[in-house]
Amino acid sequence: MNLVGSDVEELKKHNLDSILYESLPSIQIVFSDNVIKDVLQSGRLHIIQDQELIQLIHQWEAQILLIKERESQLELWINNQLMPYLLDYVSFKQTDNYGKMPWGGKSKLKTNYYQLFQQLKYEGLIDNTLWYHNKNKLSLETANELIKKIIRVTEKH
Image (cartoon, rainbow, N blue to C red; front, side, top):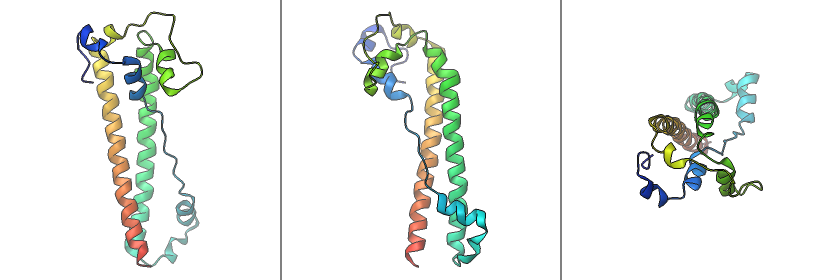
């Protein structure tokens, strides 16, 4: 984000393929919450006597749904807005090289990274992508705090 609007000399100091590769999400979190789903869906939540734990389990379920929704929104944004825009400027073959993809490597085609970093639209796309990432990060931090609370409450039993 800090490089948007920079002159050619400044941009040449950076490996833009690597930066672009690192800026795109590649990790999805998979939650193993089958036990909690089973307890909630079977109606056996009533066997838990600790009301605080019951409340935390409901909060956890809601938080997981929020995280999955936010990840989905980010993926849609990337696939429908950012990636199509980048196609005219970026060699994904070159960026894939940083993901150790077997097809990655130097492209024989000309890239246009410098012009890309001068576009107001690119700045807006990156800004919104960062906004989505930040929302996801905040949701994950909340989930982490919930996990800690659930562990504290269950340690009493």
